[in-house]
Image (cartoon, rainbow, N blue to C red):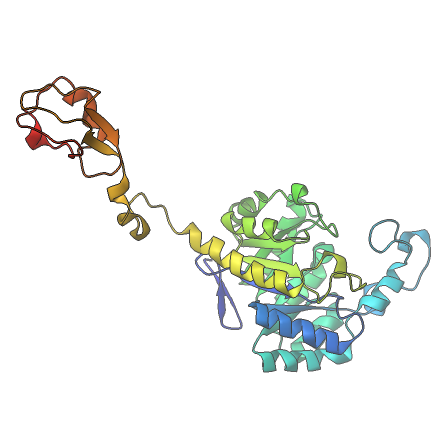
Length: 348
């Protein structure tokens, strides 16, 4: 498959990178903040806004045993239930957010975390689905999403080759015909030196799928570099203010950075072009400034050409420099002035 289509937009190597602005938990409990993030994403040039559809009741249980404690990192000291209670996108917001996206003319879809989330998103006619890295091993959820017949995007953070293969096979066997698999490192934030971007092209060739990047680094360098390795889709968390204090704010892009990503990713894609050894339009006017052979001292008729009176210099109106070795020792058939481009007609 050379491309998939989400909401009328083609996604693949022959099309500009598809940029997803991940809203995630950055609403910080305020729907107006969610609206503002969506507005900024549209203004920045993102192709889609993505939500996460779960509640603290659907993603975990209210248990404070050691299994459910978070130690270290951004969310140290919380239980899973506490984290997701504060971070989840209220389900009653979803329809309003989908309507807002329509008003802004930006695509919106979500990551469902259980079957009831898929049911809600189907009611809202979501145009695509994203499987989060932590859910890649939930094959029944992948099968349920695949049965919608909608395009799917999968993140592969923490997954090994076998788990990725299982997830892809499950999706395809249950009706998924349009799939993009995203290389991902599930660190928040993730160090760029652990991203191993060469995996992007390996995913594409190994699994015969379109590939992209889910990027948790704190700047754009990794994402832009991924385009050169075949990433046709890039997902980044987006916020209004990285110091906003929300669950995901600290590793998210601010609006001006998102705009730069949209611009630079497209420029990187345009620069890939095709294999080409012909002179480009931008170069044609500069051919005259290449080196060539010029007379650099007045030469009398019959005088010998030497390394003192003929040199390879700019501009490029004389014979190519490769001819110098054959010209030295020959003689001039006429008087030649300093600054004359050397040509065959000047040789005896």
